[in-house]
Image (cartoon, rainbow, N blue to C red):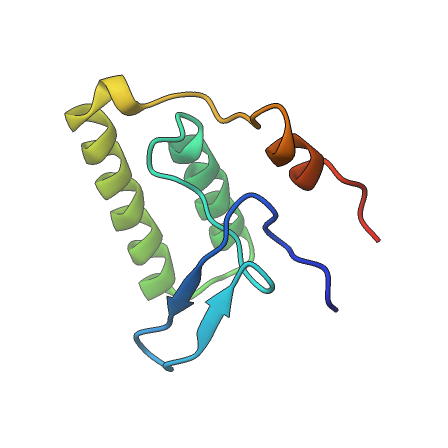
Length: 98
């Protein structure tokens, strides 16, 4: 599949465990400043528990949520609702899928 999954960000992330590299072609990014991220992580945790995900993964997500909330409490003026900027970003992000 040649279509980018995440059209908002260009990035390169390396898995600490496997050394595999991920980009906007096969991954996506959520920003810690996103006011909806804690709720998204709650839903993800709920799904993990429903589907019987390993306890270590559940703990890791819970700790991730704690770090997100701590950051958001520390920098409340940076926390905002997500959005797509008008212009080039809108054209790229809101373009129909192939």
